[in-house]
Length: 45
Image (cartoon, rainbow, N blue to C red; front, side, top):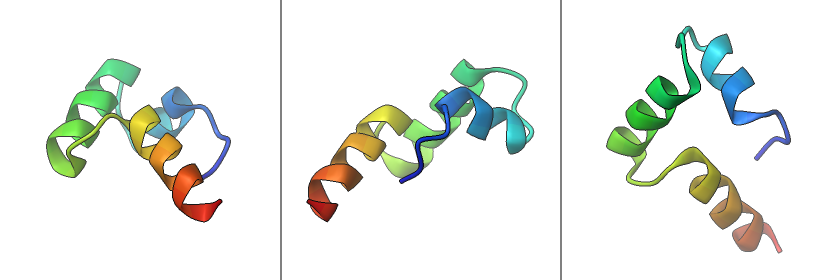
């Protein structure tokens, strides 16, 4: 997981808002981007 802000990742992928990216991510991955990032850090530890 990167330390890049979630909003920046969403904008880089073409989303016009962080909330739009968060909704899309959660619908497809099953959790919010911040929760995914937190889980990835735990798995790497």
